Image (cartoon, rainbow, N blue to C red; front, side, top):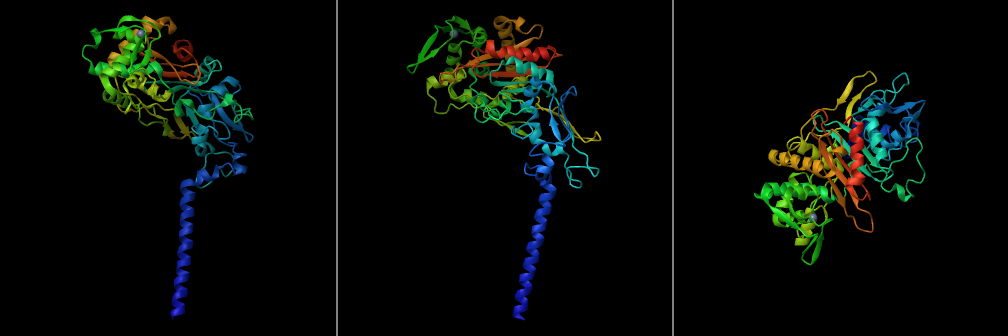
Length: 456
Ligand SMILES: [Zn+2]
């Protein structure tokens, strides 16, 4: 009896383990089948990682950005468009991890639980994905970089549609170079710098210091500052690009006087500066269509007075992510509350039935309505009085440029962030050009090219 009992128990346990194993497999099949089917080692389906029988990717005007034909993944005829759209669309090998072809590869391949990747007739059942980007604007922005590295992004701050998202360097997905990993010219080429990089902001951060000053210093408007070209704090020299002499706050921002903003940061103190930066989205997580975006950073705990001064003019430890900067511009344009950007307009089955549709949604307020209104005026004055409205003819642009020192013997990074106030042109943008020098001469032309291509 005893032996039989033990044997029964052993058999029972074995059966149990078998059933458990089946259950785990089925759960995996149901929930992760699409991923298994699209692993690169599943060569007969993906052609060595390629999306050989996948659906199409289209831009907002139905220009085909990627499609499969006879087992091959094809990209647009024009090489500039292929390069300009690389980081949004992706390559065939999935090198660009945040790209549509990588993130949505199961949907593009049309995997479903019952028929797998192909329909019973052997054709692709891949979903088509329509994007909000405009390939013409992409190409215009890409060319405006003139071979320099950087990031450019622009969206409709009323609807959330991203019209342009370009990261350079890029490569041609139709002719992938074999020296991507060895040539330093391709450093960071797999990153979409808009989403996955952050840069020293330089003077564009003065908008944050300005917001803190607007909210905390009652006599800000009437105050006169003195810029002798440089000041010394803690034996550390804070220098300005010019000797502005007596200057008020409005011209301090327009002419980007370092002395005005260094002194304001010190007067405001680490606590108020940090509170304003956090409210405006620094040290916060943003996402785009569920993809995590690299944080912008502002950290002055333990900073000495001269370091706090530098932090107020966008140096010290400050880091800004281009996507976050664009959202912040959208918030200022929208009286404090941003609309969340998105790039997926729709995902639809071969029968045209949509499984996902991009919609307009509001984000968390990033600044008060009155501070947003004040910044709108100051940023508009900055363009009309300093950059010149003819840089953006008829576009009613509010903007701020930056020239961020990065050290290491490198040229500064050039920035511009801003938005149009025209009712029929509700666009916000952020551009950074690595080692571009002055933002006004490097990043501004890229923004201007994007806006012009958008019909500004
Ligand atoms: Zn100055």
